[in-house]
Amino acid sequence: MSSFGLKLENHFARLGEGFFTLQSAEKVGSRPQLLHANPKAAALIDLDPSAFADPRFTAAMAGHLPLEGFESLAMVYSGYQFGVWAGQLGDGRALLIGQVRNTRGELWDIQLKGAGRTPYSRFADGRAVLRSSIREYLCGEATASLGIPSSRALSLIATGETVMRERPEPGAVIARLATSHIRFGNFEHFHYAGKTEKVRALMDHVIAEHFPGLSGAELFGEVVRATAIMVAHWQAVGFAHGVMNTDNMSILGLTLDFGPFGFMDAYDPHFICNHTDEQGRYSVINQPGIAHWNLRALAVALSRVVPSEALVEELKKFEAHFAGHYRLLMRAKLGLTREDEDDDRLIGALLAAMAKGRADYTLTFRQLPRADVDWLDRFGAARDDAEAWRIRWRTRTQGEDLSGLDRVNPKYILRNWVAETVIRAAEDHGDLAPLEQVFRLLQSPYDENPEAEAFASPPPPDLCDLEVSCSS
Ligand code: AMP
Ligand code: MG
Image 1: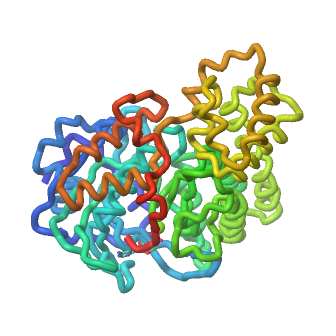
Image 2 (image 1 turned 90 degrees about the vertical axis):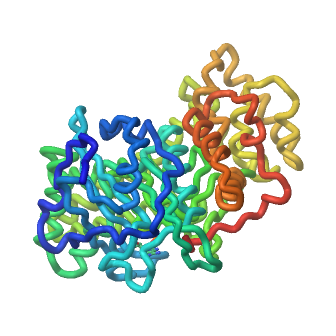
């Protein structure tokens, strides 16, 4: 046993019986192999990256070797899935293997995903496939590097085991970090079971660690604010989460559980990234409304321990938080330093032209301050609209210093085709070079990388219509 010098704290377990099941990992696969590890994530838990070379690190992050001083556990939660009450869910393939207090005093969960069955696996296998593990591994880094509150991936390990999905696939385990993995669904679980004291205990637990001194109503207000800000970030970078069920909504407003997510290529407000979401419940344009719907569900779950009028008052602030933050981010993307009552119309007119012309979301912003004519070429049928819009924008930004826009508008996002390219190389050829290259690009998404120009581009024709679903 080893703990690599980590300052472990059995913090969640203090909640006591009913919130989790103590559970060791299943020791999935006989030959775990470390495919990648993330020094920036290691720094969050004061882990020296030299540990990556230690075979015990691979063993620990594959679930084959427990961290000394921590009893691993699976959390129970419930939730609404696609608007329907799904009853009890829980960490079906996730396991909390450590909580680390770093030198800055922050508490970080280390959670494995894909390390085997738990009492909450229902009829599923507790496994994760390499394909979706690579996607989650990269996306945590992509979102965090874009300034979006998010969980982070520490390590990616191939288990050597074959996992059955629509076809047999290689299995994997990721270790991910978050300052909490508590979800709206943890609260809903106890509310609907009539266990009001447990709702209160969970609320007090979150307040004590993350919002010391706040009342329950103030805590809910903070969740409303953090969730609104998170979704404003998603909208501003063109990110669709794909599965905004209440069991995937973080109590801290972190982007959690990367499944069939998607960054948009061509701008389409009705973009649906999850192939199984036929109704488009979680389309890009619906995300703010769904966040509000989910917050309302959380308010219901808190309604026996926090006065309802206070919850209603806090919930009403969602729209202002969201719109205010979204406007701030979009104005920054366009270099609009001075506030103007025309801002919303200017932003809206650009988005309308982009939608009409199916302009690439990321490159439209990135290339806007560049003087070349390419910019208008992106707009297809909406070329004239784009040209008229650009005249408005130039008038508006005359005399402004636009040199900083490249620090706001990313060049590299995790496009589906890029993720697929990384996956195919790793899975079909055992080639990890694209994983390493894309990982580095995503960690500095605003930098120019002439040697990796292709990865900033819209999808090539053969990778245009990739389907991503919940099966992972
Ligand atoms: P998700 O939609 O990925 O957030 O998953 C919803 C629920 O299903 C969660 O409680 C997961 O832990 C569980 N789950 C998903 N896939 C598996 C699997 N392969 N094995 C066990 N549980 C799973
Ligand atoms: Mg989930």
